[in-house]
Image 1 (tube, rainbow, N blue to C red):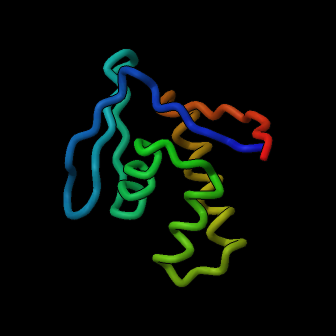
Image 2 (spheres, helix red, strand yellow):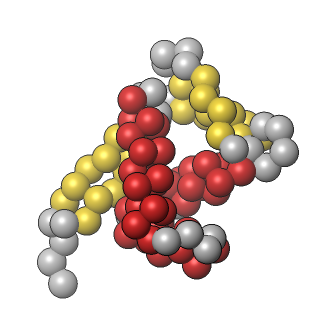
Length: 95
């Protein structure tokens, strides 16, 4: 199973403080701030990377145990979904 993510079509991104970003859902009016790491993950989501691709990329950049990284990523993605900024779509991919 491959999990792809779909950014809500009414979400816009603007630069925030430091290395972060601010996400705005124009439909709901919700605003969500991202720190530097969150902004990097969001950029990767915009590039339509899968969950595994996200983990691989983050593991290369940060010296964090993969299990912790996976838990943190799952929590972050869940929070984005709860704020109507992102939806996940799990599909089977044949090799």
